[in-house]
Amino acid sequence: MEKKLKPNKWVTFDCYDTLVDYTNSKRKALSRIMKPKGIVAEKFKKSFDAFEAHEKELQNGPFIPLSEVILESLKFASKSVGVNITIDEKLTMINSIKEAQAFPDVFPALNKLKKDYKLAILSNSEPSIIKHNISTIGIEFNAVVLATDANCYKPNPRIFKKLLERIDEPANNITHVAQSFYHDVKQAKSLNFGRIIWVNRFNQKEHHDSKSLTQIKDLSTLVNVLK
Image (cartoon, rainbow, N blue to C red; front, top):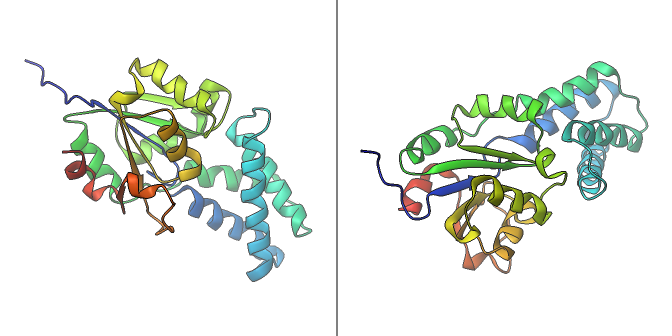
């Protein structure tokens, strides 16, 4: 007889900076690109800040896939410090996302959760990139919903609604687990997800509404928290 799932049977996850080390992997790749050009210290910080700001701006504009967002952000970052970027350096940045490492707590936690829950990824990614991230994580997910499926990026509510449509569940029957307040937590809360768990990996200052959420430092305690 098939084991009965718990009432909140779906646990959905943001991928980047929740399951894999996305931002740090980009930062390291940009450093490898910029350092030989003499862009270090404050100039490097300027280039990385420009990259991050442009990435966010593009994701709030007309939809283009993540790979294009990353390449345009790299161009913007290079212009901010007056250097040029080669084709190989563009590949370095894209590969940094494909090769982003899973946090060490991720596989043990998800492997345990799969016994009792259905697991999904909700990510600002595209198929050609996310397949590498999922392979790195080492877990088969029951559903994967991407920005390319909804033609928009989180925090746009359309991508969250695409998730609900894909897994055919009401929001109040889902636990959503994410690191980013901006991309995930606020929108999941506004859409009345049943439970929201904030993974405060980077010791961020608590938001004014974070006290109403379950907060964990990493996924090592997630199984017990869900029980």
